[in-house]
Amino acid sequence: MVRSEVILNNIGKIIVIIGFAMLSTVFIAFYYKEDVFSGLLLVALLTLVTGIVLGIINKHNYILNYREGFAIVGIGWIVASIFGSLPYLVSTQVLSYADAFFETVSGFSTTGATIFSDVESLPKSILFWRSLTQWLGGMGIMALFVAIIVGMGVRANQIFKNEIPGPIANKISPRIKDTAKFLWLTYVVISIILFIILYVLGMDIFDALCHTFSTMATGGFSTKNASMGFYSPAIQWVIILFMFIGGTNFSLHYLAYKRFSFKGYFENKEFNFYLIIIIIATVLSMVGLANYYNIGDNIRNSLFQVVSIITTTGFTTGNYVTWSSLNHVIILSLMFMGACAGSTSGNIKVGRYLIMLQRAKIELRYMIHPRALFPQRYGDKVLSDALIINVLQFFFVYIMIIIAGTIIMGALGLDLLTSFTATASCMGNVGPAFGLVGPANNYAFLPSIGKYVLAIIMLLGRLEIFPLLILFMPDYWKK
Image (cartoon, rainbow, N blue to C red):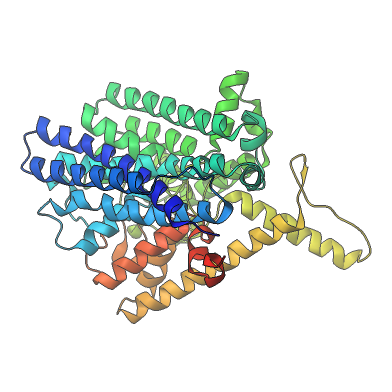
């Protein structure tokens, strides 16, 4: 049973959070004496009042059930994106609501695809909002799920533990509420460290803050048209490190702090697989760029782009479309990869690939020994058949959505390369792609329907498909 007052009350709380976040843009606009000040103040107050009223008139004492939890997650992200688009509408650079909605979803989903061709001409308050939406969306995905799980009780706690195997649920704290707190604390502390380093290396306070938000969220929005290519090699090396950190399971960061040891990282199979993929992809990328840069620049540019794409950050140091065909293959392959579960990264994630590779190996062994039993292990855990099936189902639906999106974008007049890579990039929350949406281009030229389609695909990718798709099943809403 789905109770509307429960859903609307919690949606109201989400809207209030968005409203308070908007107030920060009001202060930025006031400080820099920007013309958008009054407009931002109006939309922030409108958002706050709407959320407060929605919460008050739907006040209840119920405990969330399983269905309501998923409804709040799916509907909450859509509503957050609708209200989050309002600050863009007070800017003269945004020509339509489709543009505003696309940019907002790209922010909250940490995709980093943009409709702006000249971000340096935007008011600083709008630039700040772009980056802040990414920072909130980066850890906000996990925090939102965890917050709902707390209200849902034991059943939801079990759901949390049955996610991709890892130490989040059972090694940080037995209490989900404490787990959420520890993850957010880790996220904030690492963000502060990055901000200080960027400022010391020469970024001004505003740019350091914006790039901290987008880096830790593995989002990719920049305040510069040249993205990270605008900055010094020293800053680029720092961004590489923190993109890598953002793509790592945050529970591993917390456990490393608690134990004062890095041993936990290398005991984690997913992290090791993640690291191996980066090393191999970087070496291959260096081969492709052998005639483009000297050895030092080759290493930096190769590693930067590999880490940026696999973590789904989307920062660039140059136009990789002009690189070799080998580099194109590497980047396109990484667009279907993703980093670790429990990170701010989007996409399929390496943990799922590891499980699928293990399953393929077991199936081959079954062909040789059809009567034998081969339990599939992940670390010290034996994986259930249900979890393995869930991983395979996720992969299948993920690919089907990309195929469907490619067909739709092609029907709107885009060429095959642009249609396919734009859809794959948005589904994986990467941002830049190839063709007409390469790193030197943007998504502004798309028709409104194309922007809405890709925005929905971004949300499907960020919410890992099922929490959003389940809302469209008639049985879900039946008593």
